Length: 212
View (cartoon, rainbow, N blue to C red):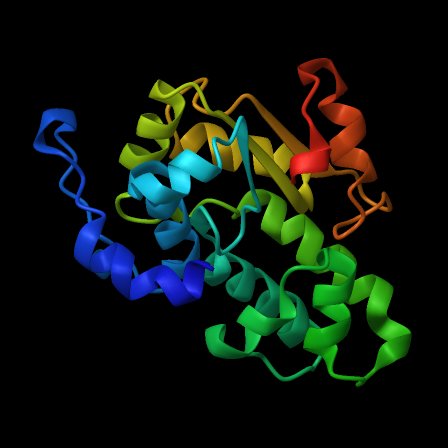
């Protein structure tokens, strides 16, 4: 729906001057699908008449924040230290989404697999110190998310990023209390697409997942 409606959103989902939001989907590139989706939910009236969301749940990397440069830099520090070929940002993007362990396995490309633990630990240690050097929220998203919150929509983040790093990124990149809750993943814990950690974490909010 988001992709099919993208052009319609660009043309018709004008954010009102009353709300002082001067944003359009045309300003978004990397996360255009997510951005258009939020615009669709908030500003396309036929959609809002049919679906009145109580909450919006976001991934983090590549969805609400651009993290790929810091991740790529950290991966390459580890790869180069152990004589493995570095990867480009473009190569790194499809490697993301299934947690740090899968990221490093993919980045190593089947080479020197006996060194996996060393490469992973080097990456993990370096990234813990350099996770917010180039990382930033996508242009315009903060204003749109603030509008969603103003309308009473609960905002959540569910990410495969380690919880402590994800929380620090959220605190640095977004206004305080914008999100109701962030659910990250402990090292070795269950990862997305398994919904269990998120469902357990938000039980006190009594969300109706039958409408998800």
